[in-house]
Image (tube, rainbow, N blue to C red; front, side, top):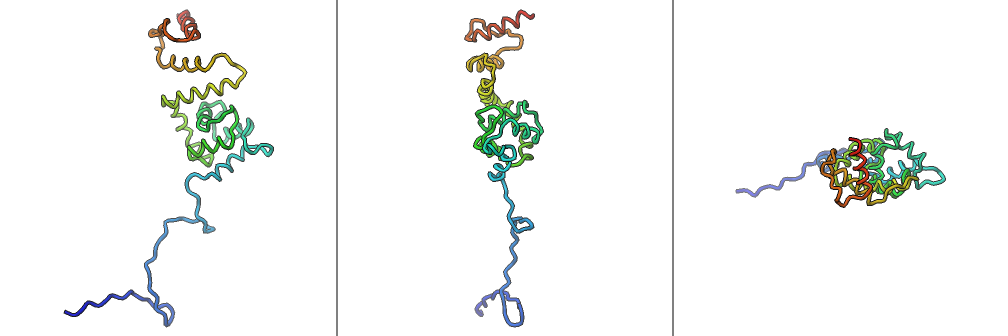
Length: 199
């Protein structure tokens, strides 16, 4: 039996004299812009910071104040007093009502993977849905106290604030399971007494 002959690579003629091996063409899945640049994919911190700067002032470029906040709310299509802004502030762990610092902005929006107004708008329903999650709601509720105490109205302390949440969760609307001898604060005893007097 004659020995098998080795199969040589297929050569195609380029020009008159040179033989060049023709490799199969590989198609890249990477899309490029007209300038030949590869577009950014996923969250971009650079774009996120640029978006932040649209709402800051020249005098204080690292903080969004009330004026910038109003414009931001207008751009995402919500009122400043919309509860979704409280949830967004909670996500950012913002320390002051009506203000976003750059570090807070990056913290919250990187978690949400938002670097454009359009993406933030697409996350609003998700942010609102967090209020339906008991664990998230409790955290947001406690966070809201820190915001509330920054106002000029300081009526209740944090323990009372948290007790009101537990009261709303545990006590039936008709107050039939409210125990006057329980560990509820006097504030809630007086509230129940007043509500019963309305019947």
